[in-house]
Picture (cartoon, rainbow, N blue to C red):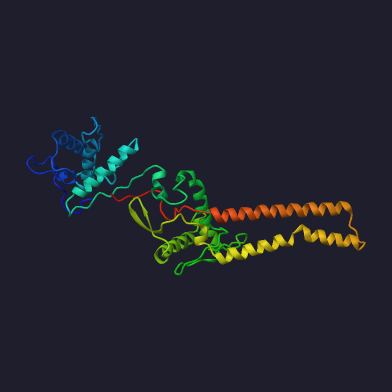
Length: 333
């Protein structure tokens, strides 16, 4: 928008003067048809009307529309236009529009603010790891795993998550942000915070973000993540939960789980039952069979749980809506 107290001169006021919209036109020369298109569009925009322009590919239709749109948004002569929407049916035309806007911004005078442009693209183009040759996406596409990665991200940052985080210095953690908080009896503040943030804890998200930034800055094993030519503050990996988790807490859980498995070992019970049988206090045969069957089943379940635990510990990765603070990919062009 113009900061001048006086409205900028309209291009139709003086045919000999240079129209103000030319500062937004990316080329030195304007073809007559392009000039006609821009000025006709501006006349219609001044009245709040509609303009339909048809022409062959390469005649500059997009440039005509963009030039007139920027002029109308920044010139007080026109109604208060704030935004311009550009829609394309395919990626090729979208890429052409991006290059067009980059050219417009490069050609503007140094004292003129560039036109900030937000580009909304398809799902794959909004995923940072789609532009990085990082495992496991060096072999598989990001779209094959995105649902699992998003689910894991939600699990990490939600209130009531049982994933124990490492809390970086400078990140304040409330009791209800911890993995061991008892949500069966939440405080009024915890309930209000969970409702306010729709179930997701900004403190947990901040802890993950700050920890990954510190990892990139302080750990020589990690380089800086570069996404589509833009450097980020994060390490060049697809983060694993073990990077952000409290390892001591996982070891404590695993040790406790091993203890439980040992306590339900059928061989221990079998020895005890045989001892009772020899000493004369023989239990009923049906009870004996039932106990052995239950213990065998318990040991099988424990084995499955242990296997699942190892699998999760090995494959539990997450995609950061944390790393990209918005699901919309913003590109300054």
